[in-house]
Length: 508
Image (cartoon, rainbow, N blue to C red; front, side, top):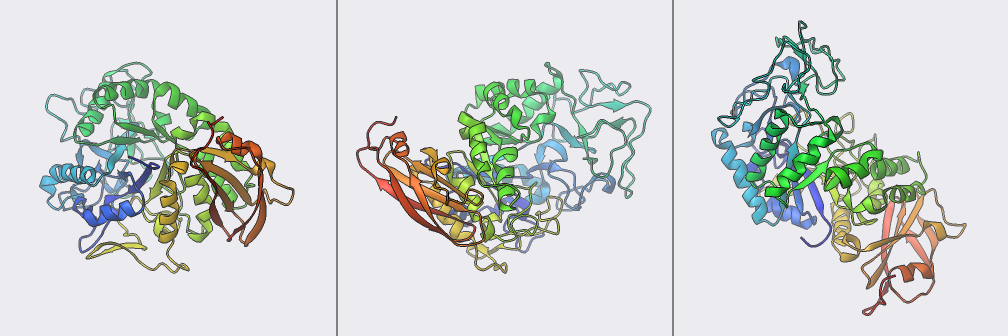
């Protein structure tokens, strides 16, 4: 697909909620896809598709025990059956897998790639696996529960100990207790992932490896184009090195995206393990958030790309996802407008793909903690639906940020921003340049030179920008030097074409 790769993350249960209690697979219709096209989207990440623990009863669902479910809807990351989809997402629950397959076909027909989650580290306490193919053991089916750890076991056990859950409601009993998703303990606390149990991986090949490979192959066979792999650092990298190679033998086009937080591991996960994309949470996201909050100088952005070097194209840039607080929330920027300078950098600074979280483009503020809950079914306040498809609902902002997002995303589709080189201008600016609040850079495709200036201050700025001769030479243009006066609105990103030629010299 031409242009920058833009991944739109959406929870189907929150999409196009109409007369039903939650969104459905069928809600992704042509009007929805036309909306995604207007944003320059290339991939749709359908979050929370695989069947998970829930308190929903009816609509084809069986309620899990309240003691080991978070919220009413339940966590999309507490999987109860790796081979099933959530019945509540189907118009006809008994036909749910066919409806999911039809969603994938519609997604492809509309010109998009489809991504879903792969959750390899843990499953729900009440994992069922009823739809596991005949002849394939269900997870834990053949485990020896009399021992804490055994290579052949799928789970970790605490022989002789009963599970002690922090949630008081419910009657769930687990004996012997299994290790929790993020903690080796039979007594997880309220801040642990107490609704999950950790899978047992070794840094060498075990039957669990084979079972997880078969799960990925199952969904790839349904037409899924990519997997956002949850909490990769909690699973031995040796497993992923093997898995990615195995899957790509049969499905070479599959994209593997890693949720990784330790920057020191970035290089290993790209070059050795083989992930196509990594969350750059600890680099670009954290830095931009700190700059918006005035906790860091805008000059810190330079350090992000210098640290990454040639790993930059393998990063997935974002300003929101289901784990993070909304830009417009009081806990982040306080309004959608206050995030435009950060959006300019995250989207336009380099050729890395960009992820957009549903509702970000319409100024969604989230709940009391600044997030849109993944544990409840609460429709987005700023993005609804009428008889013509998705529609923006007034949110109390000065104006909807959607037109601005569309302009930025349209720029990102240009070759200069999707494929071209980058030149950081901050090092060569005059003393009058406000390095704490301004960040300037160039992008070019070898024919056109674009100047970008992100203004993180809450005031209008008029500043001189120096473009040195070496910048022109870097992009293959005749050497020259320019000094321009650039005006930028508060918390905004100004983008201007400053040079164009039909016949550039060879890039240096």
